Length: 326
Image 1 (tube, rainbow, N blue to C red):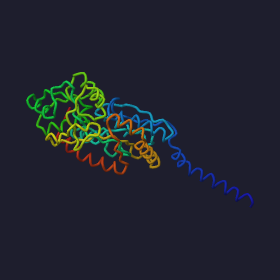
Image 2: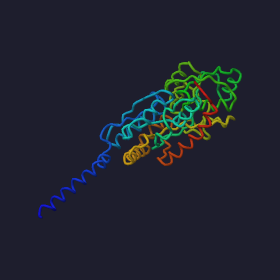
Image 3: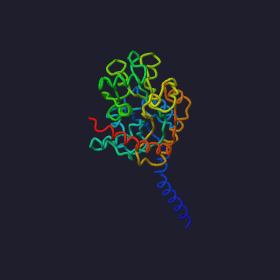
Image 4: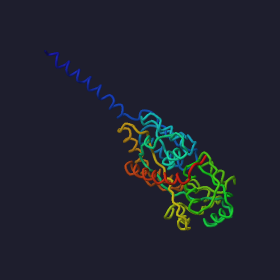
């Protein structure tokens, strides 16, 4: 009789340990390095944001957040890779606004979707900048009107570069072309970095890119910015007018944000969300991204999810107007 309470207590302890096992395993997350997929080459906005954010999240999580650039298909290859990765918190995505465009582009092209819109869960928005119209410093155009007038008199003569079909550098240029009634020639690259290199080298005549991608070249006197796709002043380039001021109803924001595979366990998702929030409020992160030309404009998960859904609805209409691009 004296042994029974001991046995019962021991059995209860074993059962409780078994039940607590999964919770303890999740509570101990992360136990190894986390891979942050950047679906573009180095040098573009996604990469510029990812590096200080990954460094800050590494400190917050106590494990290394390792960046892996996986470019191609306007970001679609890297995005699809994360969407199909195990939902265990060890593969995350630093995406740009092309994420809301690519699924609709797949529909327009009549091909299987690279990833379903609901296969990626938004956790945090870090930046949201209007793109800017950048040309070589020795280009003949001093204003957006100069650029548009030249395009009207020489249809298709202006070549512009992008990060890929339906990407964040392609869509805004097509919005401008539609609104201004001009024809431009699209030259896709694997990312913003290579496109800007091509502009600097004279292989193309213009790009629409995030301010952070071109600001250093503007300061160095190699590029000129004619206008931007916002509706106010740019913090990094307050002297640059908006396209709306120039008479064109063309607006577009290139945002960056953190996503995880849908189905990631909630405790892990909340751990990553907290680390992302800490990164967005990290003074060093803010300084690095601002010095590159983009202020941090943080949105937490619930607000960011609404923002992404609204952007997807708006971009669906834009993609349908662009139509099929091979």
